[in-house]
Image (cartoon, rainbow, N blue to C red; front, side, top):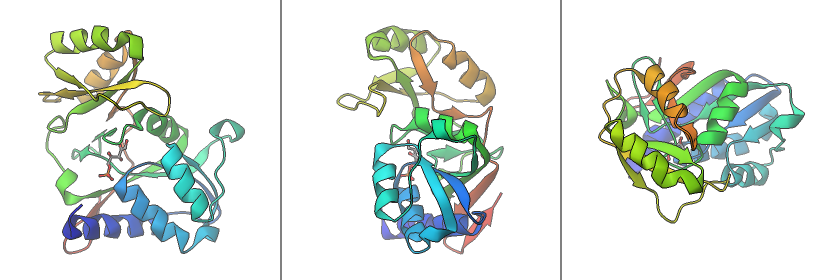
Length: 219
Ligand code: 5RP
């Protein structure tokens, strides 16, 4: 990460901390922007009651920051989810999963009353799809799903050597121009062998905090 990108991500991450309600049970995502959020949270661990995280990596970082990490199954819901994204469109719909944590991210987002997404301005797009769309698949179905995604106009590339926290594989789908994010999310989710599509369109972010050179823009 360049110093410039780092500073923009850090601005968005710090702004997210201001939106955390007192004694919140927080959902926390995965990635370099979230790592900066956890760094900021480490200075005020008492701001939150506990957290549920979307990855083993984030869970370890949260514990090191002095935040208790709970199991989602033991909770009725989460107050707020903070996570980054690989792309965001003007409707706050997202491509996520560059870090491979998309399935747990979607689960934590679904369990949260409010989703605050933290990005730097390079993540903003008019139409989603320039960033290859991550799709988590059951390993034995990888080539079956890849053929189906190719039939639908994508160019899936296996993220070889990477295994998700759920023991699955990732296909990164290139060459998509996603003009109907809700439709594509729903259609790709129906392909047998797909676990999760990294499109967050049916449940977009509620708030987008964009770190820029000048400060933070809120959408
Ligand atoms: C991980 C994700 C991340 O939110 C996304 O990849 C953005 O990462 P970063 O903050 O490092 O740019 O979806 O699965």
